Image (cartoon, rainbow, N blue to C red):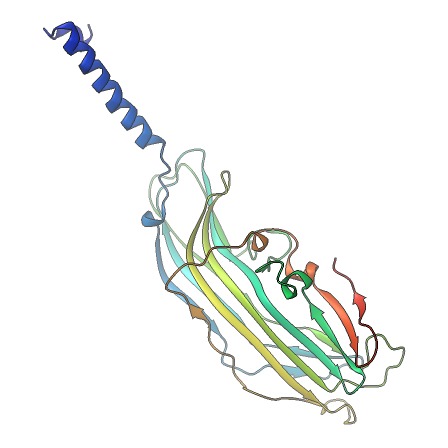
Length: 285
């Protein structure tokens, strides 16, 4: 027998009580349907971001190209995630985007080659994904991310880490020339990034930004092409990089930081002669 049937209440009171119970049950159902994973339930601890305190290494082993290897940017964080509900999957990890790039290789008075991100240079986007090109939107899918599939009955403690550096090749000779004569005189590179620690629901794509890091890498190399191979290039300017900034607020993630193309696929190698029109040497992928 229904509990209401046992109550000696007039019909009007029964109607009011029924509506009240329905309202309470609706509230309970509403609460149960709300997502259980919210920013205030996620604990982030031991966040670190640094650039190795060592100078850029110059390699002159090849008669075709000069190579240089910058110190590593490294980021790591510990996270405690609340229990994940049934039928939900959450990924926690690092997302990175390039926000500014200047990369010039000067060949005396002849001109310079430059790696460029046209959309970024022209201000059409605020950032371009720096994903590995496979794991969008994540920077990578090894130590960079952890996946949690519900249901989990208790909080999960996890650690995610990433690292990044530059290790490019620059031709000694003018890149559009058939000559192998060394003409390279200077390399300048200045590139800025934002790196986000993010928790994301794999189904709904809901994203919770947990931490924001800004960092910058600069390279300045002087080259004397008349010197013998092995003694042409030298590092000039500051020997160590400025350390990253772990922000005390969270920056939103621009749409272009989350999908294709990534910076490697979007960049263009241009030849900009001292006289004459610029030329595309390597188009974007």
